[in-house]
Length: 88
Figure 1: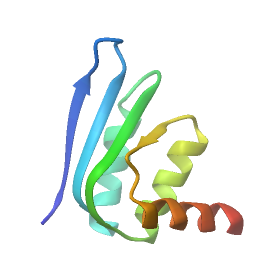
Figure 2: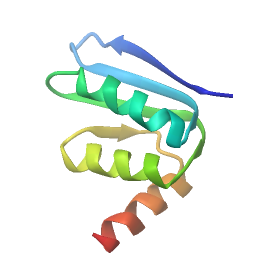
Figure 3: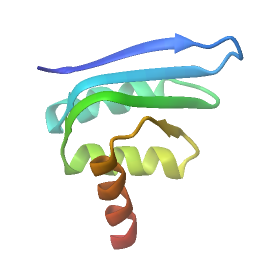
Figure 4: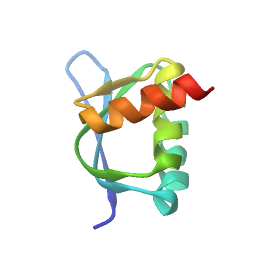
Protein backbone atom coordinates (compact mmCIF):
# COMPACT_ATOMS: atom_id res chain seq x y z
CA UNK A 1 0.00 0.00 0.00
CA UNK A 2 1.21 3.46 -0.80
CA UNK A 3 0.57 6.89 0.60
CA UNK A 4 -2.57 8.76 -0.43
CA UNK A 5 -3.43 12.39 0.33
CA UNK A 6 -6.93 13.76 -0.07
CA UNK A 7 -7.59 17.49 0.30
CA UNK A 8 -10.83 18.83 1.76
CA UNK A 9 -11.82 22.41 2.47
CA UNK A 10 -14.15 22.63 5.48
CA UNK A 11 -17.07 25.02 5.88
CA UNK A 12 -14.73 27.29 7.89
CA UNK A 13 -12.36 27.43 4.88
CA UNK A 14 -9.81 25.30 6.72
CA UNK A 15 -7.89 22.93 4.48
CA UNK A 16 -7.61 19.41 5.88
CA UNK A 17 -5.20 16.95 4.29
CA UNK A 18 -6.29 13.36 4.93
CA UNK A 19 -3.30 11.04 4.70
CA UNK A 20 -3.83 7.30 4.47
CA UNK A 21 -1.62 4.28 4.00
CA UNK A 22 2.12 4.34 4.61
CA UNK A 23 4.31 7.40 4.94
CA UNK A 24 7.83 6.11 4.40
CA UNK A 25 11.03 7.47 2.91
CA UNK A 26 9.82 7.11 -0.65
CA UNK A 27 6.65 9.11 0.18
CA UNK A 28 8.18 11.82 2.37
CA UNK A 29 9.33 14.03 -0.51
CA UNK A 30 5.94 13.80 -2.19
CA UNK A 31 4.19 14.55 1.11
CA UNK A 32 6.52 17.48 1.79
CA UNK A 33 5.74 18.86 -1.67
CA UNK A 34 2.00 18.70 -1.02
CA UNK A 35 2.42 20.43 2.35
CA UNK A 36 4.56 23.18 0.82
CA UNK A 37 1.84 23.99 -1.72
CA UNK A 38 -0.65 24.83 1.03
CA UNK A 39 -0.86 28.43 2.09
CA UNK A 40 -2.24 29.64 5.37
CA UNK A 41 -3.41 27.43 8.20
CA UNK A 42 -4.21 23.78 7.48
CA UNK A 43 -4.55 20.51 9.34
CA UNK A 44 -3.31 16.99 8.67
CA UNK A 45 -5.61 14.10 9.56
CA UNK A 46 -3.69 10.87 10.23
CA UNK A 47 -6.62 8.61 11.15
CA UNK A 48 -5.96 6.19 8.29
CA UNK A 49 -2.17 6.10 8.47
CA UNK A 50 -0.95 2.53 8.87
CA UNK A 51 2.81 2.96 9.04
CA UNK A 52 5.39 5.74 9.33
CA UNK A 53 9.16 5.76 9.38
CA UNK A 54 11.61 8.14 11.01
CA UNK A 55 11.73 10.53 8.05
CA UNK A 56 7.93 10.80 8.11
CA UNK A 57 7.97 11.45 11.85
CA UNK A 58 10.53 14.21 11.37
CA UNK A 59 8.31 15.81 8.71
CA UNK A 60 5.22 15.60 10.94
CA UNK A 61 7.17 17.01 13.89
CA UNK A 62 8.42 19.94 11.81
CA UNK A 63 4.93 20.56 10.41
CA UNK A 64 3.42 20.64 13.88
CA UNK A 65 6.20 22.90 15.15
CA UNK A 66 5.32 25.29 12.31
CA UNK A 67 1.69 25.48 13.40
CA UNK A 68 0.03 22.65 11.51
CA UNK A 69 -2.57 20.78 13.53
CA UNK A 70 -2.17 16.99 13.54
CA UNK A 71 -5.59 15.40 13.90
CA UNK A 72 -6.35 11.79 14.83
CA UNK A 73 -2.67 11.07 15.27
CA UNK A 74 -2.13 7.40 16.18
CA UNK A 75 -0.69 7.04 19.69
CA UNK A 76 2.53 5.40 18.51
CA UNK A 77 3.13 8.24 16.05
CA UNK A 78 2.43 10.85 18.75
CA UNK A 79 4.90 9.13 21.08
CA UNK A 80 7.54 8.96 18.35
CA UNK A 81 7.07 12.67 17.54
CA UNK A 82 7.52 13.49 21.24
CA UNK A 83 10.74 11.47 21.35
CA UNK A 84 12.08 13.16 18.22
CA UNK A 85 11.29 16.54 19.75
CA UNK A 86 13.18 15.57 22.91
CA UNK A 87 16.25 14.70 20.81
CA UNK A 88 16.30 18.10 19.07
